[in-house]
Amino acid sequence: VQHQFHFRYDRRLSCFSNSVSCLTFTTDGHFLVSGTGSGDIKVWDSTSWAEAAKLKSGRRAEPKEVAISPSQRWVVVCYSAMLQIFQCGAPWKLVQTRPLEVASNKEVPPEWCCVAFAPSMAEVDHPGGQAGQDNHLAAFSNCHISLMDYSGGWTQDVPQRTRSLMQTSWPSCLSYTGDGYWIICGFSEGQMQIWNAFSLSLEKTLNAHE
Image 1 (spheres, rainbow, N blue to C red):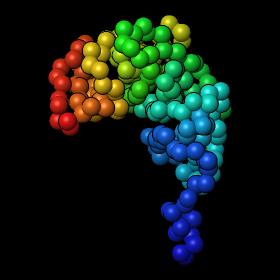
Image 2 (image 1 turned 90 degrees about the horizontal axis):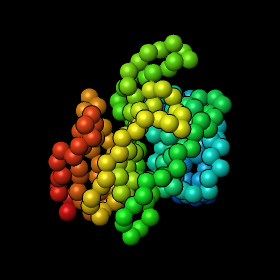
Image 3 (image 1 turned 180 degrees about the vertical axis):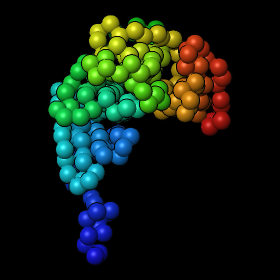
Image 4 (image 1 turned 60 degrees about the vertical axis):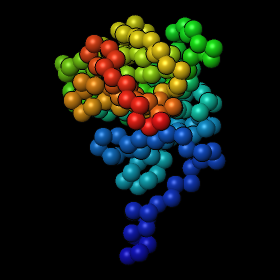
């Protein structure tokens, strides 16, 4: 009985020789996706805790964050220089690579920092005949915010809106409110910014963690 308990609930996954930099579960809890400093992105089946897939990113850089869309159609891996979008499911195909192309007037080069999907449980799926609603991915770099509408799929001309970030500290974490109305971003120097997800305007800056 003790062996069965530890096999099922207390498994140690000896999977990487580098530190784990990011991880997230699919909404249904079936898959765990993890990334390391070596650039490896692996998918684990939580029913057996066995490796189910390895995402072929072609990158050896450390991923900063991995995010899964609400209806489990897409996996987005955030690297400093690019975002990579994969199908969320076998064969876990790389669909698109989106480099960071926004010019920066800061002394340091621009880097992607964090990403978050808007909470929508009815994603658009034209091939599957599902109308759904607008689907958005928010991505923050150290110099701007980008809001991408992937309702029409991940193509090179995905509609997006951008706004510049004026502060010098770096975005460190990102989240939507449950209703999708607000985007909250935390920064390395203790600030939090509240953005309107529809107008993409800055509503308030909180200096609560200085």
